[in-house]
Length: 443
Image 1 (cartoon, helix red, strand yellow):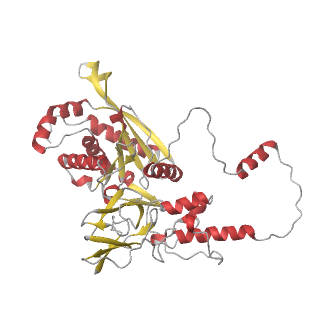
Image 2 (cartoon, rainbow, N blue to C red):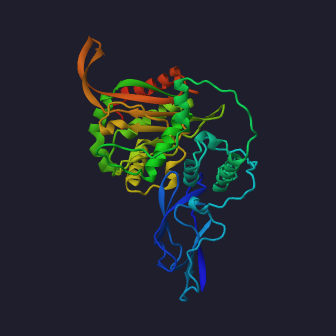
């Protein structure tokens, strides 16, 4: 009898670990080649891990909710005709244990470890397990940022945060010297603030007829990312109105021929992306990120496209090197990524590396929006619904009123590096690209 190791697969260049969501097999179960053994999750997407051999699950080394580094052996598969002598689902001595079981912590005082500085341009990454421990122990995000990490790229591991918790508990139990304090007279507002700050975290009580729904994992991640973005960037949003009549009429004219020739439907999104790309080349600061007091200008233009999922959640797949594609190529990328997102077929690499994001709030009827920046980017554009309106237009014969296809666009940008002048200039440049669309062009 021989065995084959099942390892945590490589999920993308920037992904170093994944969380085990669910085991579909247990020790002793038969498994076929390429049959799904477990579901895993990164901070971007969920994935299935297939079996790399046909045989019997001999050993499962990690439990559900464990965070496992890429390349780690997570299970062993016995192959051949002989049944394995012992089947066990007991975790190996070294793998991560669930936080609830970590009741015995070393008495050695917490000692910060020297770690190399992370090379990431984005906000610090924390695994779901570390965040759960932090929440349970009342550790704020600002306090979590101060904990040195010994993981890859300086990340805080479970060992780091448990050592910090042990140190904090130990320091809280140390006897303090007796001091005679002078009485401090507090005003009523000060006393109220102090009481609120020291009040225990009691469960909320809801009155009336309510329904309580637990957030799913993706919604929790979205919520955390949105709040972190607001804490990271100084958000400013500017608006512009543009006449997209030429663009609308052109699409109506060619869409049947386009679908017949390319076997793809052309929506407005590829046309918006095409205009954004042209303007990013003129104003590269909008295609950047911030690293401390440094501005990192991105030479690659990777456009994220916010996509609504059937369950109501949101994901942002990325069109890589979008500036290297023509309109047909952009259209195929938009349709392919959108379909994969809705069908749960996105790969982890499909959602990383974006340098600028476009969100089409008009597809749901909104005329405008104030989107939140997708970190570590510095800007995101929202396009609203296209509406017919009577507007004043200039003609050689003078001003006249005409029915035009009008649309609002908005740009949220990071005021740390992009001021109103640059943000508004870029926004109006995109507006002019859309307004001056060549209605006689081919595709």
